[in-house]
Length: 316
Length: 158
Ligand SMILES: [Zn+2]
Image (cartoon, rainbow over all chains, first blue to last red; front, top):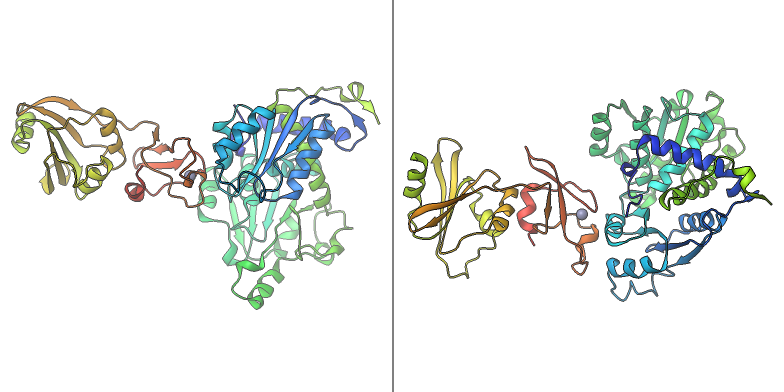
C-alpha cells in the first residue's frame, strides 16, 4: 500500500495539489465548518516514542474530518515492551484501522511498517530519518505567506546537523528552486552528504555562521533549537547558542513579508518580543499541522476534497 | 578454446566449481560470502595474487565435488562482480555461469546502520539493499535509506 514515508513519495505537482486541498480545508480545521469527509474511518496512532504535539495534531485532523482515532497507548506498558516485533504490532493495527500514523525511534521503521501493512502509513518521524508531514506543514506555511514556493530565500538556522526537520525541508525547498542559506555554529553544520545531494539537484547552497547578517535578504527564517547536550560544557553552549537567537530589535531591516518559523517547542532561540511582530509565524505553523495532515489523510485514503467546500459543509 | 584450455590448466580438479578473476585479496571474502568455512568436508583450494594480464593480480578458488548454484553465485556480485565461474565435470568445463547483480540484494547482507529497524533479529521481513549504482557498486538500505560501506558488507552477511 502506498504511504507517505519520505518526501520522495510525492511529486512537486502532488505536493501543490495537496497544499491546495489543505488550503480549502482551513475552515474545517478551524472548526468553523463541519465536513465529515472521513466519517467511519479510523486512524491508528502508533507513537513508539512520545511526541504529544505530532500525535495530537494527527488526532485533531482525523476528528475534524469526522473520523475516529485509536492510540497505541503508553509504550512503557504496551506489548512493545514485551518484545513484540514491529511487524506483529502492524499486523494487529492494520486489521483495526484504515490508516496508520507512526513515530518510531528506529530509522527505517516507517518503510518497514509500510511493507508490512495493507493500510497506508504516514511517517511521523523515524529516528533521525524523515518527517514528511512536518515538511508538508512547513511548505504550507511558507506558501500561505508568500503565495508561492518558488525562488524564495530561505535561511535555516541553529542545529542543522541533528535536526531531521531541516534536512527534509531543505530537500523540498530545493525542488522548488528556492535558495537555501544554512546558518549554524561550525559544530552543528548541515551534514556533508545532504549538502552534496542538494548541489546535485542544482541548488546553490550558502553556509555561514552569521545568522544576523542574513536577516535583511530573507523571505523565510526557519529557526531550530540548539540542545545543550550537543556541547561539552555549559559555557561553550552559552557562547554558541547566544549567536542563534532572534529578538524583535534584530528584525528592523527585514523585508516586511519575511516570516519566522520554528518547529516548536522553542527554548531561548526566539525571544518572546518577536511574538508580537508581523514576522512571527510559528504558532500558525503548528496549527497548519492539522490542516496539512487532514489533506494528506484524505489523499492517502482516496477521498477527494471538494472544490465547493462551503456548500458541502455545515456552518458551525 | 585457448581460454578454456587455460582454465583447465589452472583448474585441475575432477568435479566441482572454479571461480576465477576474483579481485586480488578478495578470495577470503568470497569464501565467506559462499558460507564456505573450514569445517566442510569438500577440498577447497585457494590461489591468491596470481599475475593476470587483465587485472594485474587476481585470486582463484576451486571447490571440489560441489557445484555452486546460480543463487549462491549471485551473492558474489557484492565482492567480485566480474569473476568468471566454471562448473567442472570430469576435468573439463561443463558449464560457464555469470554472476548477476540484481537491482536489489535480498537477504545477503544486513544494513550496517546501528539504529536501523532491521537490527532487531526477530523482525521477519527480508534484509533489502537497493543497488543505486553498479560502477562503482553502491547500495542503500531499503528501510533506513543509509548508504552502505561496500567494503564492510562481508562482515554483515546473513
Ligand atoms: Zn537500514
